[in-house]
Length: 207
Ligand code: TYD
Image (cartoon, rainbow, N blue to C red; front, side, top):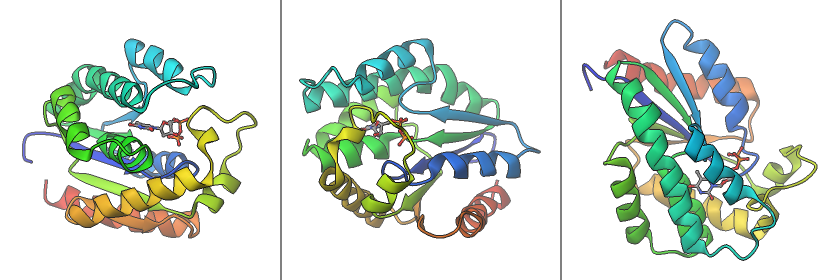
């Protein structure tokens, strides 16, 4: 990892608390150069794709169309933002990455996982996070925490869908325990933050 930056991604079901954790981690890492990303989005083209993906009028969007659009948005983000930041030795703090596609479109929508992995390998050139923090909470708690008055297209899927996504994330984590660390997102923010910082410090020490 020497000579390159550090890539950290945050994952979890809707309403799991990624955004507030990201804000606190940004503050904790203030002595470093940190580049923050959010998916889908983060470049001009990716934001246009985001609008398509979350539009509640696009009810007829096929799962495979959805998967390809997320991957296309990610492709632009990797090339325009993530790779340059890592080459410059910065820390990339990503709100969602490939694991979101595996959990939502794979486990949630039922698309083939190998197919999704290949598609995403094509779109990212194999760029992967060094560390992924998975905030695990119950779908009920996630729903309670979401403050949006009007849910977007994915949020309208309901508790059963979120349950499949949650279980999917836990399966993915079991397969890559070295990279993916599961945090109990139902705990107080300060406790979750302390656990996240412990994992990040381990990575920083080995840099
Ligand atoms: P967003 O409003 O950014 O939600 P959050 O704060 O929960 O990240 O919307 C992103 C939605 O897109 C969210 O429901 C998860 C979904 N998503 C996928 O289904 N697949 C993906 O690959 C990504 C990146 C997100």
